[in-house]
Image 1 (cartoon, rainbow, N blue to C red):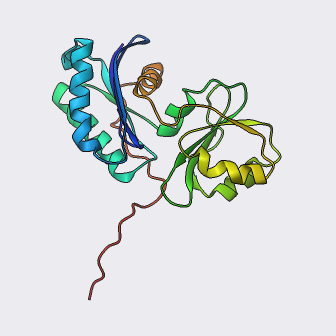
Image 2 (image 1 turned 90 degrees about the vertical axis):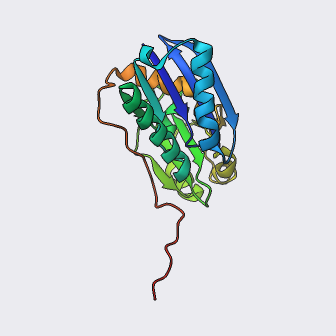
Image 3 (image 1 turned 135 degrees about the vertical axis):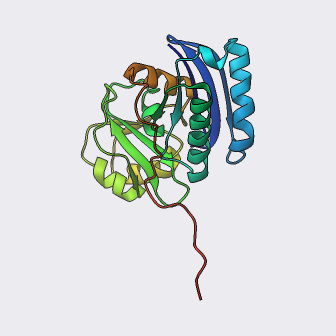
Length: 218
């Protein structure tokens, strides 16, 4: 199975071409802004390096969030446009499961992503990478209360630095492991494992309202 995968939902822009477990090409750049300008040239670069035309792909995989509101929309809009133009199926993968699937751990994995407010996006996965709870936007103190008294866990994601002081104060036993953000090859691997590319178009996963204030009416 040949897949083009990419992520623009977090503080990086990542794209890869994946073929039956082999990464044919990959690009990843850390960035807070500018995903819309960076993504299409990055896709063109990995497709050129892989030596594939879009007609040779079996599908497209994209992260659906949670993450930056604008970044999620950029990724999904690009994926849907490519899907329609090339008549390719498209599958969505959450940023939380993409990070979890990139962790090597013998205990539960708690993925924590920076939500750019006082809270974080978090979800706990079993060592077999099965979700143990629904993803949520949660305050570090609430996450610490949830994990207190449990067995040791492994933290991953770019929100770890925000929660570790609170977890330590609550007596939570944890280790911190990479990665910080989703990687496109892992997004592709998750999509390929589902083998249901002919599913409905992916929808964004927003765990809270966007940071937009509507103008007041007279």
